[in-house]
Structures are given as structure tokens and as C-alpha cells.
Image (cartoon, rainbow, N blue to C red):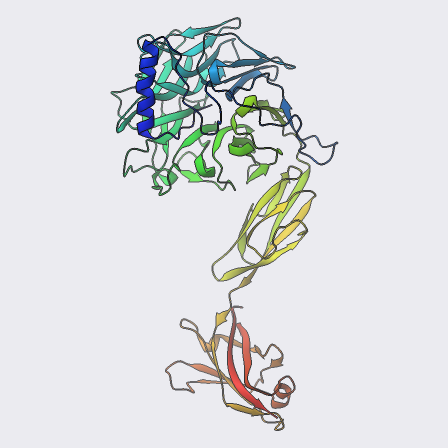
Length: 568
């Protein structure tokens, strides 16, 4: 897992300078804190996760989120395993834990500062953990190796003053990539990418590289190809930077910045361009997550934004397949992607979740603040949500059937097509927050089918009556109305059989004619209504509103009003 940075440059420089002084005096260097962390010095936090979490309402439900006892209150940043009974978690103050299928136990190493991520080769006993640089700027080490028996520190190239590595991934134990940052200097932040070939670590990107002013947080690659992706953020101190997000790609020979699509949309929001996690099923199905609820998807040619339904910072991502992906983040946020839409999972508390890894859909491990470790089983989602549309428009989630977790609140959105408008939600709407709003939510405490209803926009027309006063006792005289359509419409396209007065009186078939009764240069259609039928629905008044409505031949509705004095 990556360290998520919210520090201003001046503070970073101050801490960097101080760390050199402390190192020279033989004193321990303080960790740069995680933004989610409310820890006292040393990286310790009180547990913010309850001893038990009730996720599903029925005891027979197979879906579960189970809190696990970690034995520590240190913040945990990263997690990885070779199987469900061989899992490693790393965190603040050099914490390394191991899970054997029944118990989490601490492991011994020389690490004393924060470790941000862990990865290993399932085919071997090799496991790598990395984080903040230790001890000496001359002989630094922040990468540790486990050989199946003991953890030992690994020698790496000099990375500058107070550097850190935040993400690690490998195709095998002799093809490992680690990413992070080097020195933080005024107006300049250098990315760091290291590669391990089975015998030594070497720099792939350093001060002399062509990519500057970015800070890398995570890395992932497709073992079937030479493609590796790294994500991070464009350094906040660089004004007018052309990129909104930072995504780098390695093609087997060189690293290059990716462009196009959502990556080139300049952000106007502070801290909205940081990506913290990346994962994919292949090089043409890659997901990246970050601040402000950002989820981006790469289809092999273009990066596009996905609707996450949240503005929380998202820290980590993992999936068992393209239709079973989990994302974790701020304030206990857990999202699930079923191949069509991102839906929330409720956990009943608000620890900040920072890392995620799974061996299968039944064994997913999540780590976070306060020593939080969760185990998630996504094999059974007991609730079903069916989305449908009446009219012309779209919904999010899209029309179709979705399996959901019990008790979650799913954001639902209705978007009308051009010329249409949203009316309401109907169907099983007992738990819909507001059936009249196009953007609302439904609580999934049962199986529900809902419909988004759309109606054609009403064209506002001009209606004027052929008289100013109507005398009720003169019951047989017909009422004349003239209809002018807005610009772009033709009165000859009116379906005269649909014309109504006050939604009650049908227009006579004859006489009907077009002309320009008021001489304003706009064509109108004259229609008449039987006088007795009109007088039967009106009451005396000085300004009685009369409406005339109908449809065009293509089904477009129209309506207009005029006022008339009505006397006995």
C-alpha cells in the first residue's frame, strides 16, 4: 500500500532537513504521517474497528465481512499472500505480520520505519516489503526480503534525501518493480522506479530520467506481457501542468507517460489528481483508483472515468476477475464491481482502509488504520436489484439484474434522453429515498425491481382565444382557440384528434384551418370546441385560465394557456 501525501512543500522540506540532523545525531527518524492516520508519534493508533460487525441481516447469508485480531494497533498499509493460509501484512514502525490460516503473528526484521507495501512470488518463498528509507543516506535500505525463514534488508541504489518506496509488484521473484519518490526539493519531485533481476536492485528512473515532478504510489503489471503500469500524482507545486492524472507505462524497454482520455482533463480541484492504487485482469482491462472517489478504466486504448458513487479517497484495489473487483478507502469505504456497476458494501464502522489482496472470492484480506484486518467472502450476494426503464432514458446502474449485498444503500440515477424528462421511480420503491428525484438511493434489505419513468418534454405553445368574455347562459355558441407552435415546429404537424381544452373537451373535427389570426407573422391553427361542453366545466371569474393541449404527429406533447372572463 502506498503512503498518501497531503503535506505542503515547505513542511516536507522542513521535515527532510530535520531528518538529516536527527540521523546524524543517532536519533530515530519520525514517520511522515498518513492523512487518514490520527496517530501519536511512532505511528500507533487506537483501534477504530468494533469487535464484531453485523453486515448481513440474516444469519444464513453466506456473504460476510469478518474482523480479524491483528494483535497490533499500528496502521497497516499493505497486504499480500501466496494463499489464504500464507498472508503477510505490513505497516507503521516496521510492522510485519503473518497469517497461517488461523492466527496473525508478528515477524522479526530490522525495519523500524513505515513499510507501505508487500509482494511475493507464489511459486517460491520470496517475499518483498518496502517503505521509508532507513538509517544512513550513504547506505540506505528500505526494501526487505523474506526467504521463507528470515527477513533481511536488501541493498538498493541511493535514492536521495528522505526517499520512500510505496508500491511493489513483480512478474516473478527475479522480475520485481518498486515505485516511489526520491528527494523532495523546491519545485522538483523525482519519481523512483527500481527493478530487481533476482540478484540486485537497479534504478529504472532517476534524476536523469525524462519524467519529472511526479510521485508514484503503486505499480501493477500483466505477467502475460511485458507491460507494467505505475500510478501516482503530478506534484502539486507545478503550476499549469497539462496532466490531471499520472499514469506511466513500461513496454519492456522504457517507461513513458500515458496520455489521452481522462488523463488530459485538467483538474480545477486541489488534490483531485492523485491515484493510489492500480490493478487489472490484462493490459486492456486496467483499473486505477484515487482521490475524490476517482476510478479510471483502461480498455487498451483510452482511459475513461467510471461512476464510483462516492467522493471518498480510494486507496487500494484487487479483484478475482473482471466482474468481481473490490476497492477500499477512506472512512471504511468498500466498493464492489460486478462487471456493470460499482456498488457499496456496508461494514458498520469507519476505519480508514488502505490495502487489499485476496487469494479467491472467498478469501479477501483488507488492512487499515488501528491494526484493522478484515476478511471478506464475496461468494454470495443474497439481494437482487432489477433496473428497468419506461420511456427514453438510461439509468445507473444500467438496466439489468444485479446481485447486491444485504442492507447496502445503492445510488440510483435516471438520465433522460434529449427531448424527454424524468418523471419518477415506480415498482418496489418502499426503500427508495425519494421516488421523485432522478438521483436517489435504494436500501437493499430485500429483492427489488424498480422502473425509471421518462416522459416526452412538453412543447410550450401560445394559445389565444377568439373572445375576451364567455357568457355561460349562451350555451350553444362554440369557443374558438388559436394555437401557435414554437420556432422549429409546424402547425400542420399537429394531430387535431388529440387536442383538448382543459384536458376535458375534445376539439371539433371541423372547422380546422391554418392562418395568422393576430398578424404576427407566425402561423397558427384554429380549432373550435362545443360551447355547451365548455360552459359545463367552467365557473364564473374575472381571469379564468383555459388550457389547450395535444400532440404532434410524432407524439411530442404540447400545451398552452390563455385567460378569459367568465360571466353568468
